Length: 244
Image (cartoon, rainbow, N blue to C red):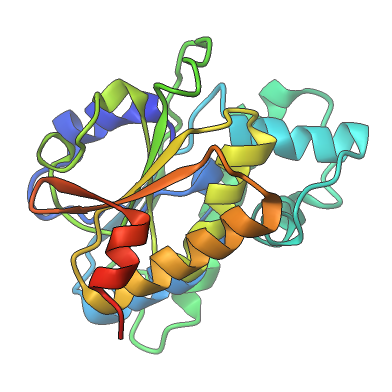
């Protein structure tokens, strides 16, 4: 979901046939339901997993493993759990070696759960993207763009500067752990969430999940907006609009 990947993904992978799925850490198990659905609904020929260095999610995993830090149960289940029992000396070892290996194992395991999956037809690869460490922008600049997996170009979707937008692309059931990590564990204290989903049923699911999360943690500064046809609607107005 890292903002630094937005332009790279658009320039190198957005060929109109590539469906993007994005979450915290790029961990396939954290988007398992989404990936299984997409593989069942589409004729998938290739799966490319792109974990990256200087990853906030891997930083959270490392803190759990080395310092005993605790996170939300959903974050732990979808992100941290798969690394339990691994013996790691450094965060670099986690990012350069263990996470890419873990991503590949997780993706193969998900594929093997599907009746029509054929590993001879579907190629799975992991390509580690090395990113330079950067300081986080102020919380008023950063936003989360919450959207369903799609082939859409980010330059046609994001209403804000691409370099400030953390993008989460997964079914809502797989998205919340990433939202929680971005707003809490990463320390970003993001001020805004934009929901770009156009399907009214999915809109309602996303709005309800985010509103419940916001209320539970008392995140009064977290603003939620619905984006439709390039126009932004406040979440309160949006909930009235899609009522029922």
